Image: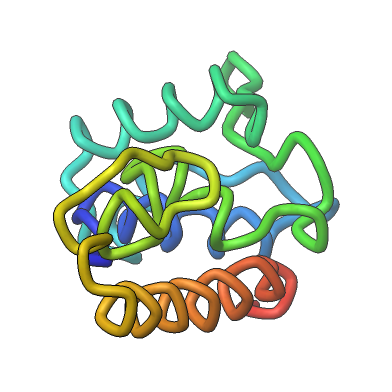
Amino acid sequence: MRLSKKTEYACLALVSMARDYKTKLSNLNEISEDNDIPRKFLEQILAQLKSAGYIESIRGPKGGYTLAKPPSEISLAEIARLFDGPIGATSSVSTYFYRTSPIEKNEKIHAVFKDIRDYTSKKMESTFFSDLV
């Protein structure tokens, strides 16, 4: 598995919002500048997070962004899957995006990739944005 820049930036933005959760709205420019995320790219990422129900936006001069649910309820795995799809290195070991693949022809190789998927998935599913603040 390899995370895209979009996923990496989404995670950084969510950490910023988790830090501000329940205290203030997160400002687009601050998130962009603090994390070196291109503003236009961040706007696209935030739109996707909003449409998926992870964040909310408030308009107006005192507006900004906030998490739609507590940071203790948003896992790294959810965000990785939202932007990049399967966590497994090959589609035949994916729990949520299974498709057959050539690696299935060798049980031992397939088992190794399944173990890697299991470890990675377990770690990401048990890591929440509240843990990263």
